[in-house]
View (spheres, rainbow, N blue to C red):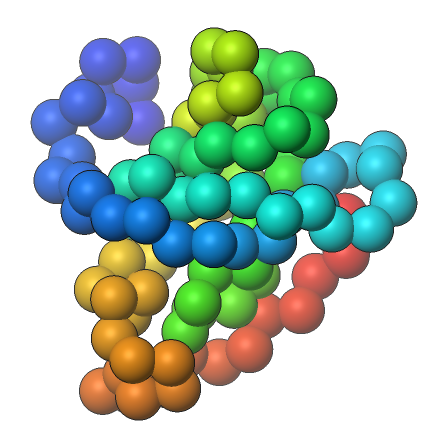
Length: 108
């Protein structure tokens, strides 16, 4: 996506807890997902990250999604996903999406 195009993509405003792993850091860290779209998300957390960092986020009913940090502002950040997801799956009750997404297990 070109700069500016991402503002045209529909987003779901929501509040989900998720775990995030970052390139070069051990373990996973809890974050809040504030909005979610097919191509990315806005998160919030205390993890110190920088623009361009490769990360993975474990999103409910979807699994681990790889992306890169697009922007950082204080404790909020944007992640652009490497592959599109179906954000409606994250709103479904845990484990009860119409078609369960295959588990994605990646290590950065």
